Length: 269
Ligand SMILES: NC(=O)c1ccc[n+]([C@@H]2O[C@H](COP(=O)([O-])OP(=O)(O)OC[C@H]3O[C@@H](n4cnc5c(N)ncnc54)[C@H](O)[C@@H]3O)[C@@H](O)[C@H]2O)c1
Image (cartoon, rainbow, N blue to C red; front, side, top):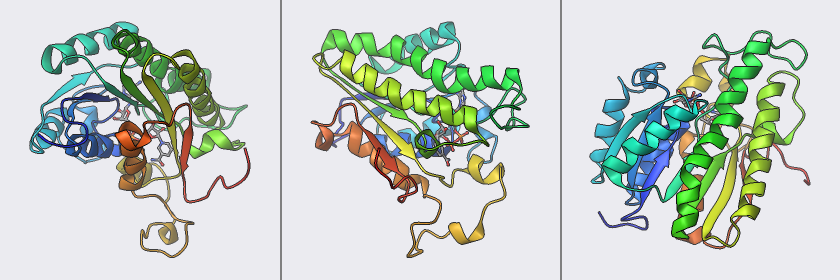
């Protein structure tokens, strides 16, 4: 397939559903072969976006590129090593890594309760840390050294608007996403002379199926054609920023975080 990313191989973690799924489809539309990933084959279907990860692979292949579905908990290093083997066997080495898997789902499979800094149960702190920070580190350490060896690669980490402001509710998630943003800068410095570009996108509240299913949404914020930016993002709006950063137009952007949040974090810093 033609396109800016033709011949490249991309991995988008957590792309079985939600924002990652939209990112994977858009990167495929730019011509890359795309590995899609979720914690399990069935978890992809939890909020009704598709039946399972196989259906996601079929949808990507319909865009005219190759795809493979891989599963594993990114907090588990052995699982991530197996993911790499499966992707390389199907598509070859990864050129583009989007670390999107994560979120504020705790040990029970739902949001932690309570979810404030002093009250959140310890097992939820561990789960959130594995899913958001340690998982991002595991995937990075598994895939980026090969990019350094080849002197070529692109990484985009997904932070959150919550990373850029104090939060009591969801404060551990916010803290971990702040760490992901800073990890992006530190990694960018480390690979500065190795041909690997590293950036982050921090989305504001965005209408993924999980987002809508796990809270009482404000109907006033649901309308994409609203004249105000005080609304939820469409997943496409977040994915567009990721596509910019993985593509050639961002060739001189390195170590940056794009806050795609309609101005929610509109202050210096
Ligand atoms: N939707 C929003 O409002 C919003 C805002 C800011 C940041 N984000 C971030 O964007 C990303 C996608 O969020 P979403 O709203 O699409 O949610 P989502 O739950 O639909 O997608 C997250 C995906 O990551 C997977 N995942 C989570 N933990 C994992 C683990 N330990 N191992 C393997 N896979 C794992 C999930 O199964 C799922 O496929 C997350 O990192 C989230 O924190 C979302």
